[in-house]
Length: 471
Image 1 (cartoon, one colour):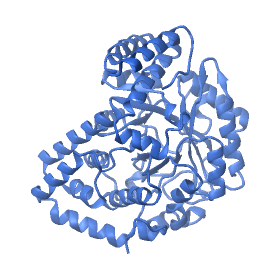
Image 2: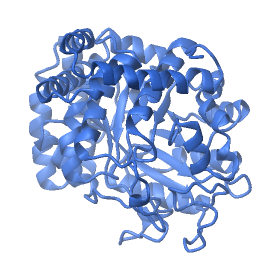
Image 3: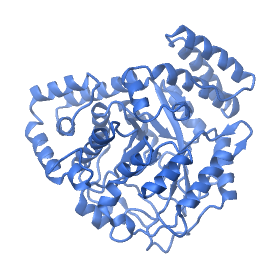
Image 4: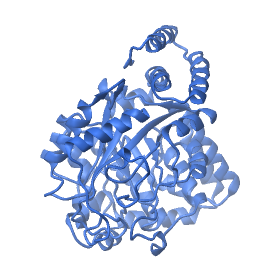
């Protein structure tokens, strides 16, 4: 029985309801009257139910699909402006006791060198990331209670926050580690993490158990209910995601939105972010062995439908995707991207990109400067802002500001100030010239005179060497 307020995974992610949703979408994919009414509702920026959004996803009418794309782009502009938040993943350890069949870190893989960063190596990685210009990291580690206990993760977080190199500082650490206990989530909260991220991989229970044949991750309910434990522990920014290609995409799409509805129903706030990775090639992993791969066209439609269904949630696209695909999909609602990423343990210290410990092949191998330059040429402001988290604007406080349209008074000037820092400290000459022109142009768009004047003065202070201003 489907119950979004239930705390049991198989009730808030109901297989029966998902199957009924897919059947409803199939029955109505050519119902233009219903389609128009759903699009009209989406235009109110209040979101859609998983059933309504599934009808849009099933749509095959190209004219309507373009309408959905245009709406997704407009909603993104209205709520997030033209800002794109920058981050990088940091892989701490590839030791893992699970046997996930789609991940090269699985326990049975004897070909991959196992590596775990020491705290000195963590410092070296952070310095390398700071030298690139990054301010926001997402730390990753395999599940291994012996090699990667919670104490190790906490030590790494403490080390990351402690490193001050030149003008560099990591101001926000998001955490992507295995499902754990309420007590451990409290420890992560107390350590000052930003968002807790956990990909479901697949919401289809039978497929989930087959894809995770052994190890603690095999427990579907424990994994699926992790966000509730995290929020119970005080972490009010959580990030959802599925690995598209493992199971049928329409099933995953409906379930992902049901999970968002569950968090809203129980905790009063939905996911802070939704990620949309696809299965990619890696050591001993061939994506073609999974028969649920999706085309670029379907992938773009998924992104657009997520944006109109959960308008206030950030959407993340990683360097798993090519530069060409990222350019295509970014207009459909994406608000965060990684840049200059390396998915190997200790990869940032190496001059040449190492491949032997990569979790997946990086398709977009441009440097952070090249990504920043590309974004600005496309009309986006690359933002290194971490202010909301540091000012306590998280969870329902962030969502209320976003829903009221007030968040732009903070985010827009913060994006410009952090971009200015990047330009002063790390950018190539071409990127710097491009960025200074963009900042001058974007300052004129700040409608609040007081905010505009403060932003102008602070940018002048940044030019003189001061750092870390925020609204």
